[in-house]
Image (tube, rainbow, N blue to C red; front, side, top):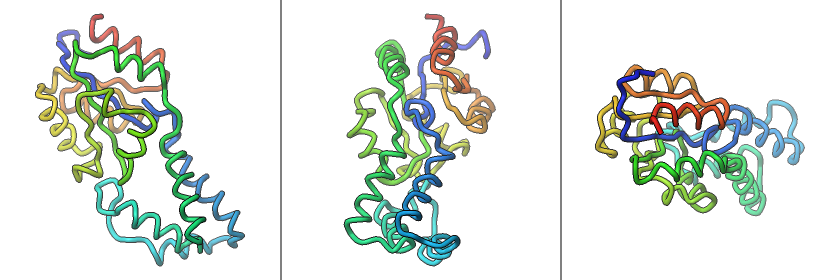
Length: 211
């Protein structure tokens, strides 16, 4: 962390930061639960998924929420009612639980600092996260990867976030739980904090800001 940094903006990731959720674990657990419910033999789901998977990237907005729903419903052989339940459970798992302490800290930064969310995401995330946690009211800007067609650690999504906030790279403090994304931010001149523990992150950001 450079001692000469004069921060004007603080940017937060969502999954694993503002939301307490294991992005690496929940998708498989969620799918396996439904695989078990439908009594599918080993390998049947994977084969079905391969047949029905749409082309494109969810993170880049190339696959819609409706396409995702149809893909899993077809692969698992779900009825309409079951597909609705599956999607509801998916969003519950995707959104996890709010880190209240970190949310409150983010809220306390305004109006002294500009604030933003920078998240790799999927179609439907804005609706679901706003409904649960009101992120649009928490920060000045939200940059969702599926809405802008760019995803971390692509440098262009960091630059887009700077542009929307109206700040220079050296004026940004960034919090993310994925080390690759943290390193990419640092290479672009951001002051980045690798989030592991909420209290430690709050203390480190507070130190950087000189509050």
